[in-house]
Length: 479
Image (tube, one colour):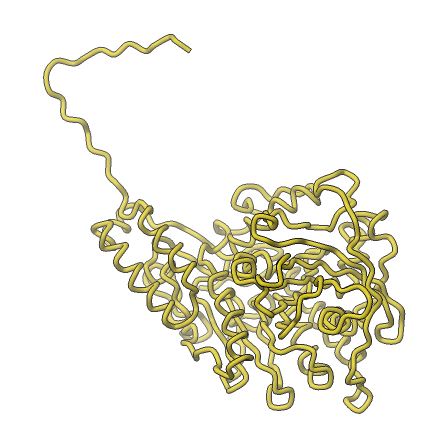
């Protein structure tokens, strides 16, 4: 039986949904009033700073710890300011881009920072940055919401008054305009060019969870007039988008909790599935969780460095009922999704229609090991060595952080009598996902290499055969 979230979690989620509804209702004028041309913000920067981790905090919040220089990339922060929803604002963007125009693939991925945890969090960069770097994308994060700037505990203005004290976002009524103007600043630069002269050919708007809610609202209310975005990646949240009117491609990538109403936080009812069309695709990844182990690994060092928060190895328990975090690499599907959106925009060929996660009544249908049936089945799920579920139980965000319980040795031995049989199955399933376009070649190679090094089935220790008299071995006292 699927265990539900706490009342506190339900209430927080409900408050978020109401807030977004208010934003849409207040900040979105009737189409006749929309200005088709988005004004350019004033751009200042790049803002100088010190080495990340310095006690002064005079560097970009959550500056990446990925070695960008070795990959031919640079990270820079800029301030943008102007008028949004009839009021002045000043916010920030962070750009990670190739230093050479020859390495740029022409696509900018613009992420709406997630502020669920009361600070700017780059949820999509955490999962998909390896693909952005190896394929030559520009990535830009936009501080579009008030909470990321003004939160009394973790907001940018509190975190570094010297660096961010002049930032100003009155409320989330300004968020859509701020996001649109940030994109305008890189599509049609005036004055300071945040991407150093690179020629943007297409923009993919991306956001995870709460940010996907806002992006869906942006899509439904502003995209048709502004046309700044070429495609949308809506990650781990399901909301209807009006592709009949807007006519812009959307790829919605979902984990297990996201196939429920309000991403598994505010109900136990399967969410209505928007049909796949020529402009809409929905991918559901079996075994994946809304917040997973890969995201935890990417965010933890920055939480420690910039916030003094260490969630502990494997995220600690955090009061959750079961061991935390699915190990299904949702990042593989996300990475393939961005490339699929580029092909969709440039060639008109949509991503494939793929199987949905299966239900039995209102519950996800599962096999004898507790793993979901149907959906996109990566080899880590289809050739399972553990129970990986998208759901957990307990307080706060426990219900969406997933569950991971490795199989015992006897189960592994039964499923995979020899190491070769295990590797062969991984190779077969990985090749299937590669052909389906949900795993990219480098990630397929990584999967197979990991399988070859995995101790599956477990190697049993044999007792040494004793031949002849027992030999006494004296322990050396040498250092």
